[in-house]
Length: 178
Image (cartoon, rainbow, N blue to C red; front, side, top):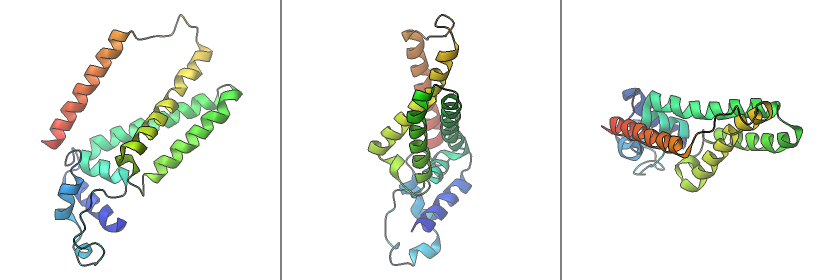
């Protein structure tokens, strides 16, 4: 089943490689691009698939290259920042930090064969974990910097950042779906 789903997702990506088909479009588009050999198999014929069992292929098919690069960039940034800060951090935080890092790495690997990121219960835990890992940069810098020299955004700056982020996400979603 997964080979058929992955093949369909790859076809989706190849037809619209830049912006993809739009977020959440896999269940609607896959039936028209499913491999012909899959319709002849008794365990795939007539089955309505909602996901390709591969988070990275789904992001590529639905959001295109731009969305995939953003998705992978967030993951790579969190892993790189957390690894470098944990490696140079105080020994008491290294054990917990590397355990979190290994858990996130296992989850990111699981994304190749699973649909877990599409369920809010799993996705929320994963993205919170990625946020904790990315905060490792702050922990690493806090030891090296003085409290007065650190940049601390105000509530208004955070609100502005949130509004701009939402507008960019909405614009990208609208453009990708359109």
